[in-house]
Length: 104
Image (cartoon, rainbow, N blue to C red):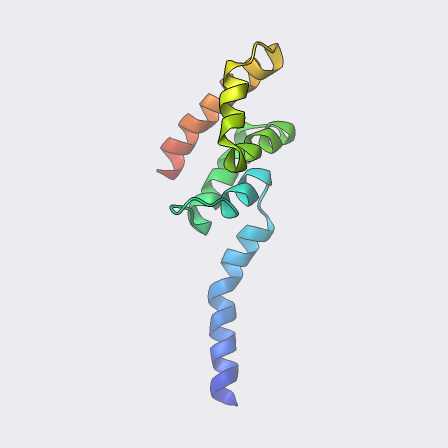
């Protein structure tokens, strides 16, 4: 009984930080965590999400999050003639540069 309690307590200690990061994730972090990419990790997705929260508005984060599920959407927006999409794309490129510099 004590051994089982100790195992549960140790598991909780190690999982709590990861679960807290997931629970606090914004749209980009959640999209990253649920993406089919093999290179994803809680640490990487948390870092990307942190940069997104500092670099993009909430609406821009929601739009960027869609790229994880539908990469073609990014291409469509990049090639769009919409002024709104052009402004978004400039912010998104700067976000990508910050992610590379911050998250590796």
